[in-house]
Amino acid sequence: MVKPRLYEQVLERLRAHVAEAGLRAGDRLPAERDLAASLGVSRASVKQAIVVLEVQGLIETRHGGGTYLVRGTLDVEPVEQLVERRKQLPDVLDAREALETKLAELAAERRTADELEDIRQALDFMRDEVAEGGFGMEGDRRFHAAVTAAAHSSLLAEFMKSIAGQITESRTESLRQPGRPPRSLAQHTAIYEAIAAGEPKKAAAAMRKHVRTVAKVRLLTWEPEA
Image (cartoon, rainbow, N blue to C red; front, side, top):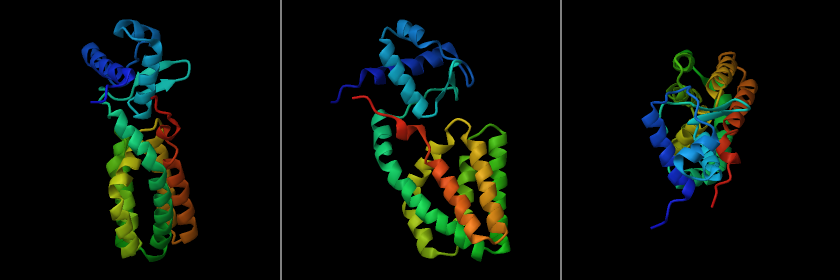
């Protein structure tokens, strides 16, 4: 059995600390030196654990302002799963850019009035999610599914279906980045407007810009500790 890395043990202690202290979303975590002292570990181990929590979007580190909880719990994904996703994510994002850029272009050419309404409703759903403080993940899923349907390309739709699980992971990774949900919503709006106007090139460009934003995630800059 592989022995857990020290900072993985620290992650569990931090999770327990948050629960026992009754900390909630928006609350500030103690300083690294104080956490190290209270948990009985080195500051370096605390720092490594904080980075993993930041990668997972569970905390937000503000320059000069401390570290804050994004959610009320620290339900940490196993580090090995993070490492595996880090390996796969670039390929998934490449596939998304190739497929979804073309789907947006085709949707601008082929969409029906009903399909355009489906895209708009998905946009509204995500807007409501974000307004209520959520990540907007279900609205995001509905939006991209509606664009795919409006493209009327059964083969491209099948390709999208074949990587649906990986797309969900990339969506989760992107939308939990600080400040990302409203930015994603604005980009969805630009895609919708281009499709509504029947402008294929503009729709493709807007989708390409969006997927490249999706690719800007903390996970890809993380270097796992041995």
